[in-house]
Image 1: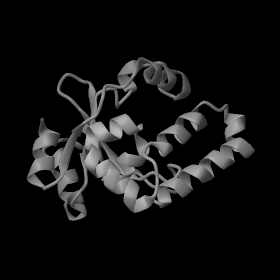
Image 2 (image 1 turned 90 degrees about the horizontal axis):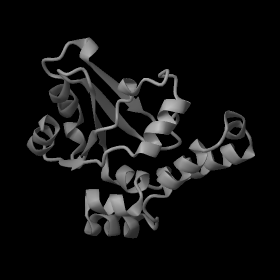
Image 3 (image 1 turned 90 degrees about the vertical axis):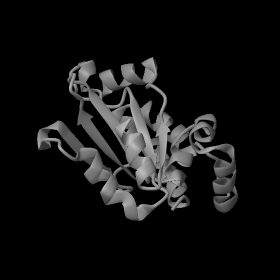
Image 4 (image 1 turned 30 degrees about the vertical axis):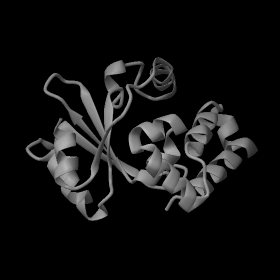
Length: 178
């Protein structure tokens, strides 16, 4: 794939992410403002570039979007202050058949925190997951657990004590992965 070639040419790792689950798709259809249109879900099929070489970040963005019209791609920066401590970049590209393809660009520590342990190991390898755990003193996937608990709250609950506590826990967890 194009993302795989770019990752390899810039000295980073390509990670094929699993297909989004039916439960996640259904949640997105209900909880977002896409009007129930499954074609507006950008990350059913997705991949990740694990950014081992931070100096290659802009080159990756440029290569992913090279030759595309501005309307055929969207770049979304996930800043820690807006994403409960998580950070990364998403590049959505409209494919020739009209579907959306997503490439996430983030560092291995964010992958460690965002994915359940078995998926972290599948994407990063057991050796790297164990190394990050030793360096940080953290367990993998806690950010994932917090996010899904938070996502299950009603809008009112998200503003209340439980939602605020989950936001703080997520921010604290991801800050230890920087």
